[in-house]
Length: 289
Ligand code: PAF
Image (cartoon, rainbow, N blue to C red; front, side, top):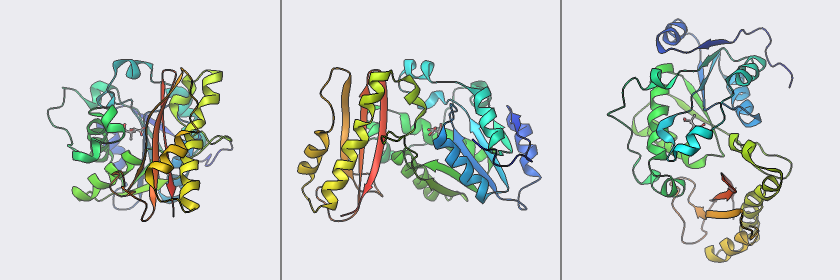
């Protein structure tokens, strides 16, 4: 990957007060962009970073595997941690600051307060990962408070997360523009995710079925089908029936509220979660009638 801005020196900061000191001198004069990540950076993150680099004077990438958003201890312990490789990518893309705090810096004591995301957090992924979006919203609000960015960048792949962050921004009047960045895909359509590195060869083959299913829903809708169960049945036929693949959910939802729609009357988002072996993948596509 070509270096984006070789003139920028990327600084790694692990603590909140030096980060605040570094950024305080820029406030009001420069546009500060935040790309929140859990590390294990891939081309999807690079697209977020490059978009931020184009739009902001100072780009901060946070790398923090947030324990609060993991519903299973096993998922937290096997989440990839690759800080040195992440630093290299950030240097190559001209990131100004990588904020990489330890858990004790972010949560010196177990937090008593958290963000209640209401029913937006109880459906789709939230139904299967209780407390996940509370943990996401809480850490994102903390990162917003610590960095106080003008703009923050999130991927369309995590559509429910994006909706919740946007909603938190408007409900709490946060002076931050939330920027949505399109999903980056492999040649066969598999959405890039830090979890893809857990897939074995045969699992990697099966993983593309989720995108094929979502595309089938999109095709059905574009061709005039309006019955939700017909569309979902056609989409689910793309999922292989093997022991290693298990569809967790596949729904057509309202793009704003993320609620399942009873019929197709306007644009909908086809959203799904698929287990391939021990790896859980999510994806979505926007479908226009
Ligand atoms: O999308 C992610 O990587 C995480 O959920 C986020 C937004 C960095 C919060 O931990």
